[in-house]
Amino acid sequence: MKNIIKGIIVAGAALCLASCTEFLNRPTVDNYNTSNFYKTDAQVEQGINYLYNSPWYDFQRGFIKVGEVMSGNMYWGNSPYLSLTANGTDQDLMNMSYSLWSVNAHCNTVIKNILASEGPSQAAKNKAIGECLTLKSLAYFFLVRSFGEVPIIHDNSDLLGTGEYNNVKKVTKANVYEYIIMNLEKAMELLPKDPQIGVYNRVDYYAAEALLAKVYLTKAGLGGSLNAEDLKNAADCAKDVIDNSGRRLTPKYSDIFRLDPKVFNQTGENLISWNWTVSGTQWTRQNSLQGDIQMDGFGDHGDLWGGWGGPSVDLQLAFGVKATDDPAARANEKDTRRKASMMMAGDKYEYFWTDKGGFDFIKFLFDEKYGKGGPGQMQCQTGANCVKHCYGNDADHIAGVGVPADRMAYQLPTHILRLADIYLVYAEAVVDTDNGAALSAVNEVRSRAGADPLTSVTKELIWKERRLELSGEGDYWYDFVRRAYWQPEVVIAELKAQKRSTFTNLGDVYKYYFEEGTWDIDLLTEPNANGDGVMGWIEGAQRQVWYGKDGVKGDADAPNITLESFTLPFPTEDVVFNKNMASDAEVDEINVRETYKYNF
Image (cartoon, rainbow, N blue to C red):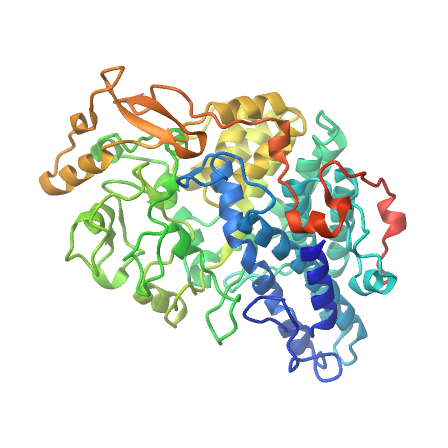
């Protein structure tokens, strides 16, 4: 329980605005507490600002590697997440667990501090506590979908007082989901119904309700078949958010992922976000993802090393494109989500490198004089690089938020729950009971993206639509997890059928296209057993497969996947501290609402 208890102890001892370079390893001694802070409504709001960034910081890599790499949306070299072989000693898995438990511990501590405060209005205190409960619920939602059965840490100080923190036991997944629902229901009692559209969004009533809708949809299959009551609850919550929250889908899809809150939150589509900042010197307040997923030279701080990974061949095929296609074939591409998710040959971006007239992907790769100079080659062997979570260069950052970025530090929010997701939650919840309403909801999402409307809808089509709409946003693996609750054989087969390999010699095609302005797919051909293709491989599987010139012929690069693959192992050090965290340890069954109560 080292990570869990470390978070409990530090959050219990630390004063509410605490953070340090090695996040939460020790409390600072000069921060605000209830004796000198939380005296006004403004201070209460300020006192929870950090819950939207710092405690989540160490989850960033796990957010991508679990949500996108494990799911087959992203290629990441020889990563164990690509081959679904990450174990309990993996540093990113450890950091992910540590971060999520830290969120819970900090939310618990902030709630206690606010309750003990004197001076602020009850409305301000209620709102702040509701935000804490929603963010705490979000952390548990990630925990149960990632690790399965986990312990419930309801009150840090109570657990510390018992001295039983190394003996705490896991509870059933059903218990964890009930705990999440209980917290969100309480949050909704406390939160106002006033979305802050056009500013950095904070949690309100409808954000909590939207998360509750998604929780109900996920929980619906937990018993091995879909539960009608859970589906109805998911639909009712989602419909209320859609109809009554005052939020709308942002008209231009790519605007969702820009820096300026007046752009990304112009309609209130983003319901829950990690709101990062580069102000001050406190490490962990900032977004650092661009460094892990973008090519060297794209930004201004020498902190980019992610060009060798990128959107997978399988995700390209889901969008109906391939990096082996002539870019001219995409000239009339309708679905704007593809370009807003992955850079490919021929793509240009008006919102990156705004001081240089925009960003030209193929020119960046091969023109040494362009901008600061690109890598000189196509790095990611799938032929695509990431777009979401990227802000561009300092000029773009200044134009968006008024200040430059810093090394491994920028201010672009990470959106965790969007209104489009809730449209699709609603569609999936009612597809068997009100197919017309489901079709209408899906087409609202497709219409905003410029995609042709569907004439009919099924669960499978909604499943694919979720992938296209939310690709790159850390969500797809968790769709596999929830579907594995009730259709494990379907999702195992889908994962095994994915194209997780890369293309050989595609860089030569890209370079020729840059130099000559024409597309020559024959450059892909090299001698092989089939005589017609291009070699690709998945290093983690230690084998090679062959693709034809169409980019899809050959084996499926299937990872070795079983039902157990949908549950990540607890960090090994947690199991060492507490044997109750072992995968085969006994799990408690409890009455959640009788065991845990909030007296406010």
